Image (cartoon, rainbow, N blue to C red; front, side):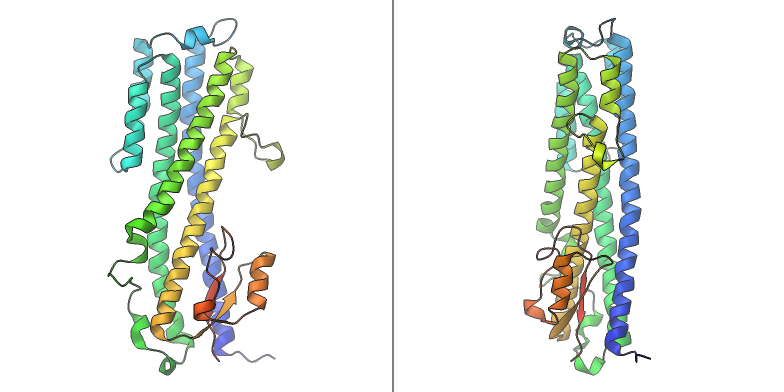
Length: 321
């Protein structure tokens, strides 16, 4: 029977922490998927309404799409806007909302593009809010995890008592509330969103320019769960789904980055000299090699996810020498 040591207990506790974070990731994935379905419902509903209202025997033509907006179009626009809660939208969302509101009045195709764009702004705003909440929650739970594990498994006489305090940056701001930290991932999220919106609008416009048939419309709105059939260059649903995947990856990567920073800051303050690498379930070869080459001097230990990869959920714990 293998004796349980403080180090092995610490490893097992960290593995459970990783599993808890992975479970939270799955919950966030489900939340993002609900945002995706709502966005696609709005886009699909309005594209079908425009098609049924304006298409003739040859489909929805460019001539029809270029006509001035009607009272019916304006009513559709107002109906769409009432679906969105814009009260806590940030400057990026408000800027794009203003742009689409201005563009919507040019003609019918501009109105269609604006409705598609606003649906994707709402999707991104929801994702951004969720990411912010998760990162704050992950940092708070990591602080509690650090205090509990160091209290339970480490010889407290070896370390300074500073680790009992919440993890703070030198200026007194927590890691996640630093403006520059938030803006990095937030700007990346909005950049991905604008690229997606342009791609989706171009897909719709391409079909309208050639006369959109009902089969074209169905093809645009058809999503593919099978990755082998995934067609983001042809399907609006698949292109929007890419945003869903990107947001999930961003959340997991930024959460891992913040947790790694919290760990490193706490270990430095507590006087930890060496750390051991704990891999997530099914770790890739890169992370497994990092683990095999440990333990590491804290100052020289690989960072997460900078020295590993996006989506990494591996972790570092004190190594008791």
